Length: 306
Image (cartoon, rainbow, N blue to C red; front, side):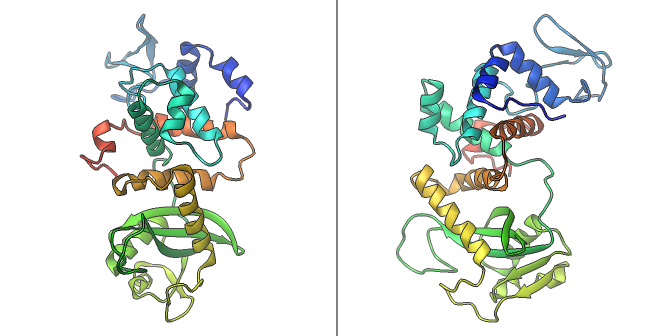
């Protein structure tokens, strides 16, 4: 059963103590009761240190172990406040904004927390798009001289997949591609779209291999010219993505961290019609408890784990 505060007053009242946050995380992580991550036993007892000792293997497990909160030196109350703030800002937040809201002494801490929360915005084992899906690419990055369009230099290529719901925007998926070659684009579509779906693209030859991979490939027009609005759904998402990066983050998104921002944009976009911001908070806690711990080294890109 989904259980979450619906207003800031309910949030403050419910999570007024560290123990309340721990109990909520316990319920979200183990809704059917405790399950040992080492031996799958469902029996344990609490220790004086606030740990859970497994009856079978005697392992002592923290409710935060194996989640993005693992090894944190900050109270869960502060993490919960961060998640509430992040999910209640319609257009997202910057690290500086989060630092000011939480009263953190370090900008770096706020920056790291935001990237960890962005990683948690990707649900483990999430399903791929299906039905009629429009696919196109866009380049994200600052102004650079030289070639424009496909093959542009100094920018990152983002593949956009959008479910067409009677010519309205459905769910989206965004992913980075090395280039606009057939190998890269086919791999990107396979990551985002369920085989058997109809994929609508322009006439770029990089999509020619989709039929062989089990997709019904619908080409809007045989030739593609830069500037033509052949794929309005994907182009609308591309426009919203770039405005979001320029507005919320002033365009200051490093290529090495762009994937995290794409995760956040996807999380927000796919839940744009949610009536309750509290439900977004609940989903983020759920996913933060389900993913593996994210180290600062991984966030900095020194050890890619995407």
